[in-house]
Amino acid sequence: MNDHDLRQEELISHVPALRAFARSLANDASHADDLVQETVLKAWSNLKSYTTGTNMRAWLFTILRNTFYSEFRKFRREVEDVDGKFAAQVPDRAAQDGVMDMRDFERVFAQLPADQREALTLVGASGLTYEEAATICGCAVGTVKSRVNRARARLSELLGTNHLMAEGEPAEPDI
Amino acid sequence: MNHDRDHKNSCANPGNAEDEISRSLKRVYDEIADEPIPDSLQSLLDRLKQDRPRG
Image 1 (cartoon, rainbow over the protein chains, first blue to last red):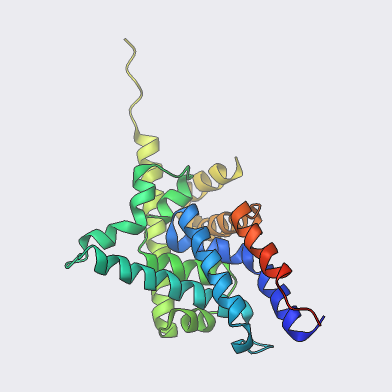
Image 2 (cartoon, rainbow over the protein chains, first blue to last red; image 1 turned 60 degrees about the vertical axis):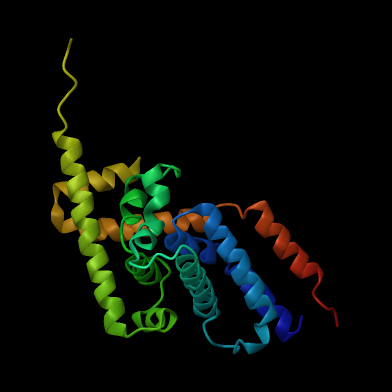
């Protein structure tokens, strides 16, 4: 097996992680898998540009992220959403419609802004460093830290609020 | 379900909330990563591997 074959095998081994990262961005399983397919195709045909010895997962995440945001920008232009109100709702729409069978955490996680979901997933679940996450997101390390902190604070707030609501719900009256 | 138990424990003790977030996040991420690859994606991977030039 030559070096190129090894790269291809490594690329395939990252597909599960790509699916998990895509889900954090797209909030919809079907759209997430479409993103992964597109990412695999792009990466496969550009494997020569990948530098052996660097972080392939970070490279793949960058391709997937760029694909997602480029689609998102295209979509926003197409619907002429001048003030961005509609676009801001898109990432949460599936959860609000109850299309996905999400558990508590997933439902609450989906309420975070896309940039916070992305930062938290990259650092908190994918095991990437803040520096790697910043490179993928094309922003400063401090920005990633700030997004992660805001995401954690918001999740704590939402999980706590949801729990209190569940505890405080009045019982059905006996009739 | 452990997830529910962890959630309730952290809410009872807000100091554990961050740990619970990390655990839940990792659990959701791992569950998605452990899911079987959908047929359409698997077909694509198989096709790419088959088309790989030999030699």
